[in-house]
Amino acid sequence: MTTLTSVIVILTILTLTLTFFVVDAKQKKQKLQIPFPIFGGGQATAKPDFDTASIGQWEILSQNSGVSAMQINLMPTNKIVVYDATIYRLSRLQYTKGMPCVPYRDDRTLQNKIDCFAHSMEYDIETNLVRPLKVTQDPWCSCGGLTPDGTLVSAGGFQDGTRTIRHFGGPTCKGNNCDWREYKNTLQEDRWYGTQTILANGDFIVVGGRRAFSYEYLPKQEGLKTERIYFFPFLYETSDIDENNLYPFTHLIPDGNLFIFSNNRSLLLNPKTNKVVRTYPVLPGGARNYPASGTSALLPIDLSNQDNNGPYKAEVLICGGNSHDAFYIAETKKTFEPCLKDCNRMIITDKVPKWETEQMPSSRTMGDCLNLPNGQLLFINGAQKGTAGWWDADSPNLTPALYYPERKNGQRFKQMAPTKISRMYHSTSAVLPNGKIWVAGSNTHDTYKDIDKFPTETRVEGFSPPYLDQTLDKHKPIMIDEFTGKNLKYGHKFEIQFMLPNDVGNNDLSKADIKVTMYFPPFTTHGYSMSQRLLLLNIRSISTDRQGLYSIVALAPPSGELAPPGYYLLYVVHRSVPSTGLWIHIE
Image 1 (spheres, rainbow, N blue to C red):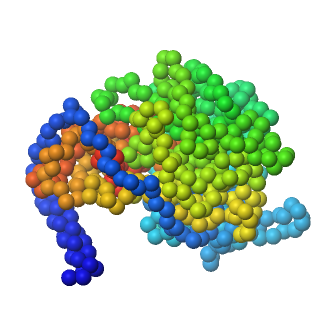
Image 2 (cartoon, one colour):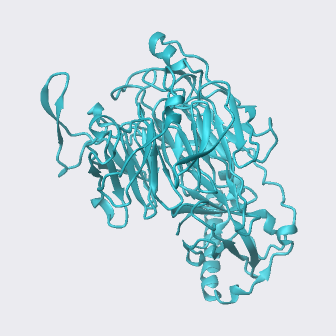
Image 3 (cartoon, rainbow, N blue to C red):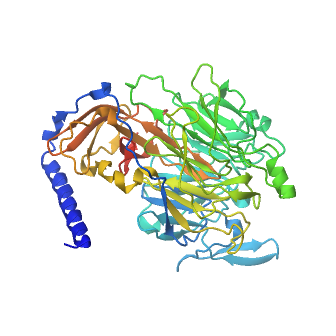
């Protein structure tokens, strides 16, 4: 028997086996309500993570997606909505037949012209095909996020878009008829480089923007204006010669308050009373927000040992950036200062919080920090010298770094395989349901350039973290879609069923070996993923039948403060190896 024939036979057997298990499970669903318990329960010691020598792997997903991915959001439809800026009047994707071009006035020539290029597109993560979308009110350097019903809402931008609120998708939008719905002058103040964050009740707050020392709340009803602005002196106080207070890092924490970090300072804001409830120690070393452009993420929120009573720990991570005057030096002298290499974390729910500092493997500005399905974090993209801004950085940081939050200080980082594509200013990335990282964008110019030291990038890459090493496939949980709860209610139990490949009644599996995580897909731009959060859920029980089908009873998060209403990706994680994610909804 040839090697190829052997492989085909093995794959056929595995396919038939999996099909048998799924069909058999459907027939036995009632029996699975009283299966064999997994012994050891919560008292068992978790086994070590599965070993792999992998440092990740890169692949090209698309040679030309048409629009450079300045701003992105993964949608519950398994599409990524991408847009950059209309001011360029150029992209590598033209409108399809039947889409009328956009008339505009050229300020340089004072002539009336038409723009037939798409500045937004919908990227299908399953086929890697794109569909041009029409956005006309310039969304350059805006913000955004997903509403509880799965609508993408984007606020602010540049020039005619600076007070615009845009909507895309949602329950009324079907198939290829979906496009942007734009409402001009619905914001009270200009929001260029502002941050948008979802709150516990599903509303959005938009904080800051260039010369906007305020915040406002977006209306629930599409097309309405915001009611008022709230003056926020903190943003004025944290501005400096280069501003360095743009795209403030804003995280909703488990008590419903907002942690807001700007430049090198932070505080806690109560969005119900609009009062500052506490302040935090200054983070020394330099500036962290745009244009110094460090990055920030909320560490996974652990509910695994809680019975919905709390209190819940919230810990924030802020890493990289540059000196307070680095942008001025880059702009005026085209001298690029080395970026910051430090990475800092603080338990912001502690009575006496303090920063804990360690060093990253390399310095980084304009890089993304993503929560991975298994609780690790990934630093990716950016540069090692300079700042954000056109032509203001050099020395691309090609090497991602994996971060293990549970390890000791000094042992948390591991360098991954480098890419060959520079991802500089205006680059982005996203976690996909299959666990891969979608990487795109990079345009340091005020137009699209094909030939340059850092040309405009419309290629899309996929990065596979170590947990996608093929040697770990035999340990990868396979969730049974039909028997997994997808509509969660706060504080209620729900069921998840999964298999492990080539496993029949593995009594060696302990509850401590399994995690269930929920991931909120963020809006990502300029090195910051807005509203991103990962939760480790409470597993009440795990049981199995003789055919190796496992049943988990898990507890949904108790409130919107922990998990704002909306769509999440649900994962089962087996000793650091995550399943493919399933879309779920919580309210």
